[in-house]
Image (cartoon, rainbow over all chains, first blue to last red; front, side):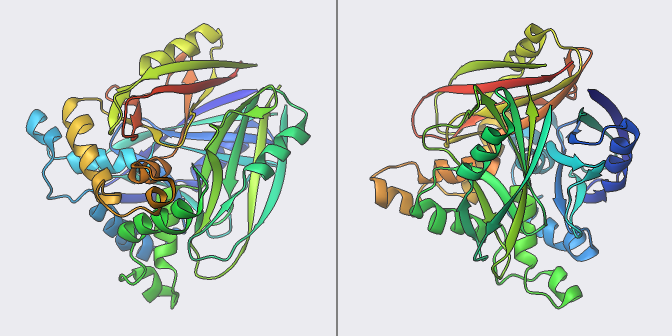
Length: 139
Length: 139
Length: 139
């Protein structure tokens, strides 16, 4: 059995970390399936998905510092030369974080740890409305 | 058909790389399914999963050096200020590596390369008993 | 329903980015399934998968610069001391990018953004013929 939902996520861009755990859990609950896996997929190439302990220190500072090490905002990006754009670092960060996550669920509940939330990180240089596909496969 | 197993993994923390290929393969074998994909998911926010050629040079030195570049152990982490904790770098490294991996299997066998093993990397600052969910969906 | 295909991808190595979107989409189309998820998995430990806006600036320069920050080509790698090899950085980069990607499809079409392509990045130090498994589960 396959159930597909699209979730809309409002972001401020610039590394904004949004906790989407409740939205994913609600999609799983609505599916009526009790065991399986949900594939969470960000549509677009300047945001990514992972899990973290969602708290301000990690979300607003520590993760941002690591992304700045990997792809500094003020670095030189050929992407920007080509397109007269300002989001080369956004693309690089999103590709390294990755667009998809697969989370199992058992008895209708995601198998996350107590301090483990599903987050979307929007690396683009402006706020966006993101579409996240939640594809639930199970029984 | 969905089969779920929980695997327990004992670690030393501090970047300890554990080869969990045999445990994942055993879970697939026990499922009795012959074709499908296993979603491997680390429960918790200070460890992650990927594949590598499992040998001491990569596991004990080369991967560690890269994680140190991304999130240095002696850097400043707001997470630690907030919680009087010492594992800010552990959280950041785990979020960047990611908690989940999907591996197809065909005729009951994982489609890994000869020198490609499934590893759990525990970034926490102490040894832990990790729970890894192996969710097998197939026919 | 599970359908498995193997796709062969010819690369030049050394960070070569190959857009494999059409090959994955064709495998989904041939499956005859209309809703589900495709698990895309790179067999081997010196290449990885993600999505990006596939254009020369990002593919040939910007992503390469980030990988060089994470695992410099001329760094010291114990993997090379052990095996008299030259691809320690290739292994590290591949492990951090990750071998697998799960992409949902609806009405037979991948839920990718308009400027979001599925790419294989081959980090090895020579050209390779890569095997990518496309495992399609759905209905």
